[in-house]
Image (cartoon, rainbow, N blue to C red; front, side, top):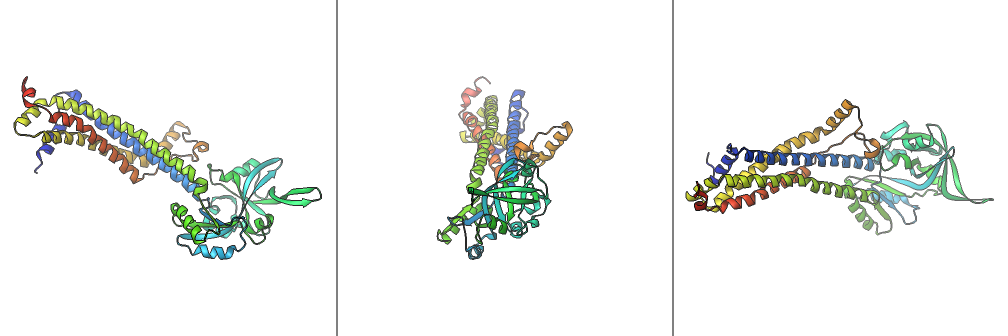
Amino acid sequence: MFYPLELFIGLRYTRAKRRNHFISFMSFSSMIGIALGVMVLITVLAVMSGFDEEIRTRIFSMARQITVSNFTGNLADWQSLEKKVDQYPGVIASAPFVMNQGLLTNQGMVRPVAIYGINPDAEKKLSVLNSKMVQGNLNALAPGSFGVVIGQKLADQLGLGIGDKINLVTPTASITPMGIMPTFRRLTVVGIFEIGNGFEFDSSVAYLNLQDAQALFRLGSSVSGIQLKVQDLYAAPAMAKNLSHALHDDYMVGDWTQDFGAFFSAIKMEKSMIFLMLLLIIAVAAFNLVSSLVMVVNDKRADIAILRTLGATPRSILSIFIVQGSVIGFVGTLIGLICGLLLATHVTQIVNGIQDLFHVQLIAKGVYYVDYLPSKVEWPDVMKTCGAALVMSLLATLYPAWDASRTEPAKALRYE
């Protein structure tokens, strides 16, 4: 098979056993350094993407993606509004809700909560609340029963179980002979859910039936707003903006980024910073590649001079050593890619095996929201990592190759 002269000699230099074993070791260590850098970067980014995905799943399984309300928080003609927003492209489901603040008290213990009035059947289409019930049933939120569904953590804090009674104090005031007093209501715990640690869903949210919440907060037939579930979660901010214009700014349209957008922006920035910092590992390996190629050039001065006397141009010499350095960078990147993908796809099993073997808990659920190490390989991250490694390897070859191209045959062969 025919190869260009530069490619043939560059590949030959890469495969040949050098007289100086130290140079061979330096080239090998450069290759391994690049491979380790790529492997570590792919694995760390996969773990960060896994945590990101896990947190997103937990938040968006419960968070309201888009909400539509008015400026008073008392939406009267919500039925016609719901029909209108249901026809908007990208909307999967919708339901009215009532939202207010309150205090749950039991045996002297008090906990602030966000009270949501929901329709149990509609809520099943909007969130995973029904599938997260660990005790009781969401359907137990029957109108007029004044039952309440709370999180497992809140139940543990207040010492509650299914069938227990609890007092709810609301900011809705009542006028009594003793003056203005907050409204009290006796509720029955009919269900307990568990979403998991993080964002305090299990300790700061309680659900009532929609009609009970309307009666409790004296809304009559009105509601606080309408919540929407959309096809593309990440298009929700744009959809909310367009929906606000479509409704002629007569309503307030919010989306999930108002509550959680800053958090995910911080995660994105953290991931970018970790990528840049771990990229320094590959940069160190690339710098090592510069050193090894400089030594190769000095070792091959006589060969370069002979090639020059046979008619090789400086550009050809430059290309020979670029090929040699690029091959080292490519092989190192390829090894790192394979090892990184294998490690990233099995890191969960590896960490679980270490925990079982040494009887330790490396991932504390109270700190990291999860009790295992999640991993999700995202191909854009893999491509960025491999691309950066190849570019830095190529840049590392430029100075040694340029130095080789400046070799003068007469000076190089004078002492040979």
